[in-house]
Length: 387
Ligand code: MG
Image (cartoon, rainbow, N blue to C red; front, side, top):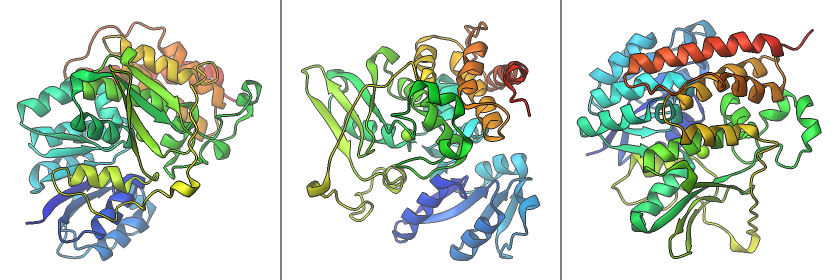
C-alpha cells in the first residue's frame, strides 16, 4: 500500500522539493491531490508529469495563464474549494507548504478531517499553537514538522530522553547580511535581501531570513511544538546550514543533526515518518571539505529576532501580532514602498499595543490577525519611501 499524499502549495519551494522526493520513491508514495496558488505554468507541468486525481486552483492562478488539466482530474477552486478538497479527498497525510497566515485555515481543516499533517507552514503554530495542538489531540492526528530545524530537533528528541534536555539550539544561516555593518542596513535593496546564500526559497521567507524574523518565528514554533519555554531555546548563527539544529543536555553534552541543506530530507522524513529512511535522499557529507562556523546572533542589527523571542515568552496574542505586522511590512518592502529597516520599526510599533489577551478560537485568532494588519498598514504610512 502506497502512502497517499496531498500537497498544499505545490508550486512553491516546499512543493517542488516534495515532488522531487516522491518522484524518487514511487513505490511508497502517491500524490492524490495538489493545490497551487500562483504559477499556472508550473501546475500544468506537474499535472502532466504525475497522474494526480484532484487539484485545487486559487482564484489568482487562473489570471496568470491557462492551465491544462486532464479530463480525469477533479477540480476544486478558490479558498472554499481548498477546504472542501481537504475534507473530501482520501489522503493519509497532507503536506502544508502554503506560505504565511494563509496556511492556518487549511491546517485546521486537516485536523478536523482527521488527516495527519506534515507542517511546513510555521504560521499555523505561531498564530494558533494551542488550538492546533488541542485539535490534533482531540482528533487523534499527528503533526510532523517540516521546517529543517524542527525536523532535526524532533529526530534528536526521539533519540534521547526529553527530560534530560536542558535547551534546544536552533541554527540560523544568518542570511545575506550576517557581516554587514549596521549603518548600511537602511540602503539594503529587495534584490539583495532575496538572494539567500544557502537556501533557495520564495521572496517572503528569503526576506524573513535576511531580517532573522524567520528564526524568530521558528523560536515561537519550537516553543509551541516541543513545549519548551523561550528561555530554553537558543539561536546560533551557522552560515553553512549543515548543522540543522542541536539539543543541549543537562549533563553538558550536545547532540546535533547534520546534512547538506536540502529540504527534500525533512519533507521525506515527515511524509515517511515511520518508514525506513530512503538511502539516497541527501548526498553524504564530505569531511575532507567540511568547515563549520558558529557565532552568536547580533540582536542589535537583527531586532526582529529579539522581538520574536519576547513575543514567545509572553502569553496572549503577541505572536499573532508579530507575524501579521511582519507579513504586512515585508510585502511593502518587496513592493519597494518601505526600506529594509522600516520592517522592524513597524513591527516594533505594532507590538507597543496591548496584545496580552489570548485568542482561543480560530475566529478570534483571525480577528486579532486582521486588527494587527490594519494597525500595521496605518503605521506603515509614516515609513513610505517618498518618490
Ligand atoms: Mg527553517
